[in-house]
Length: 254
Ligand SMILES: [Cu+2]
Image 1 (cartoon, rainbow, N blue to C red):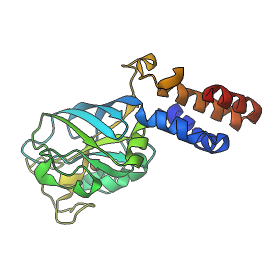
Image 2 (image 1 turned 180 degrees about the vertical axis):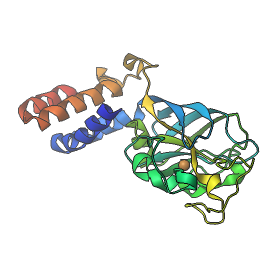
Image 3 (image 1 turned 180 degrees about the horizontal axis):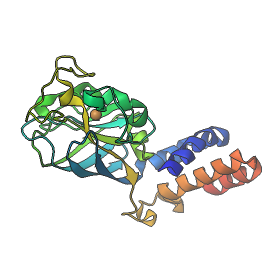
């Protein structure tokens, strides 16, 4: 995960340096990436779960399985992006109820809401982050949906930077969202309704072999292999071996 992120960060300048962006970027866009995230407990929510996703271009299929959350209360669920691509330490001291982690406390770790995992064909953008009528409201549920995301979100997901966060924690054990403190996301909601309950950073799975990618014309390599070449070139450029990287480009283009 960390290694992938580092390679991605190095790959960007390499693309500019090699001026080979159009052909390779196209291959990456068309590549399918399969992701998995074990969902870990935050705020002693009592929950657990797992998420899977398959991203092809801008199309995202996602499945989320959750157990053990507060029953009969909506669980806002999102893909967050733009942070460190990871979950906070569950032991982190937050600004919430008896030190609970509130959503904004851990924004550096998982980033902002970019995808709202709503049901009922509702909006999946960040604008629907608190569309409580269209989120699951059971203690245990399975959610599955296929939808389109904007380019920058697709790119982040392709790079394995997405973090799944499920919200809603009954800190005081009252059986509902209540308490004195209001939400850091919406001051008309109790903080319990939006505090993070589960978190999982997507990681690329090896479920589909790179060789299984769709062949593009002219006997060129698959998108996965091309992105490997770009990443390899980036490391060499970073090491000052620019000549080798240029040879690499010629071989990639031929
Ligand atoms: Cu969220």
